[in-house]
Length: 118
Ligand SMILES: [Zn+2]
Ligand SMILES: [Zn+2]
Image 1: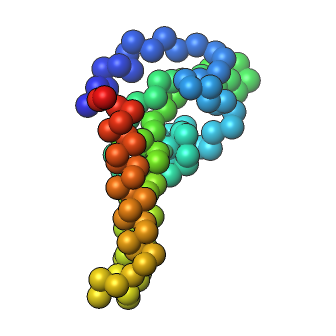
Image 2 (image 1 turned 180 degrees about the horizontal axis):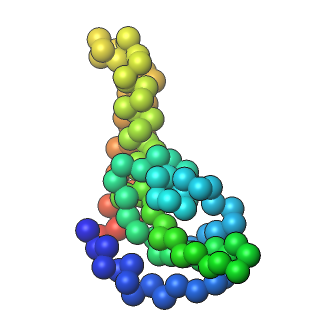
């Protein structure tokens, strides 16, 4: 965890990190319940930095969070798990959809590693 990075992000008005428009974020995203990038309900999360929202005279700074390790991997994993949870065929181990979702997850992991540590 590198939460200390938050402290080094200077808050200020204007566009948020990674070009995020704070006005476009939902309440759930501002409060860190959902990923600020893709809107997925967060389980693991990583800090994105902060955005500042003005409501009348009040400026409020919100720390933003995103899927950990990244949106593609998180969403691929969720898709596979969500499908398997409700799929009879997956329980017997003969489900093309389940296999396809797991393959997508494996691909996302590989891409993440390719882009990440190098
Ligand atoms: Zn996300
Ligand atoms: Zn299945």
